[in-house]
Length: 232
Image 1 (tube, rainbow, N blue to C red):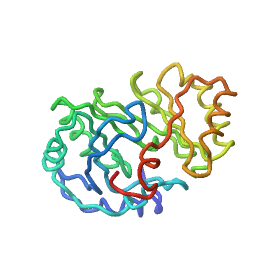
Image 2: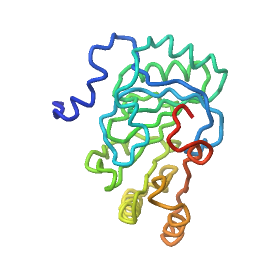
Image 3: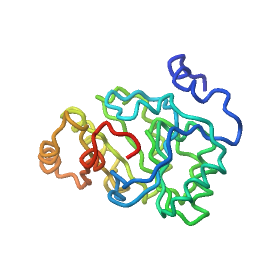
Image 4: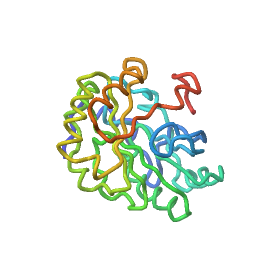
């Protein structure tokens, strides 16, 4: 598929990287801030580069900053934390094909592996042992038209779908998508408000009035540390 010039520019940090490497922004251990794994100690492998530009993105520093690291070194670094839970996040990990064998190797090592992905890239080829946490982009993200709806047929019942809500319009769109695709009967569905514009109590009111059986979540790390802090 031919990429637009805009997307080509967004993938520039991956140009010329050696085979067998992953361009990584940071690797660190913290507590999982979102998903059904929230609160658990977790090692995060944050990859560099993203094809999307969500209006509310809180990790724009991962668009370009990073270095190519041999896969074995990434694997060894993750295991050095002696933590049973690891998540690949970004950026967008699936832009780098090396993410796939890395996740398989981590699962082979007995770790619980999570993949945080934007929903704008196919999840085909992801090891079935990996727990996929996939966004569906709402209108106010600016990336709604780039959702890869075919991913819904590739996800497992153990995977999770996340909606980030920036407005009442986003909530109404998410509600229609959930009902149209019966998402709340097929997967765990997560819903969170953009930090700041949507107050938690406001989202609770919308959710209760809708009757949807989905899980509201807060970005735990933004309440523990400075919302702009890195590596947490």
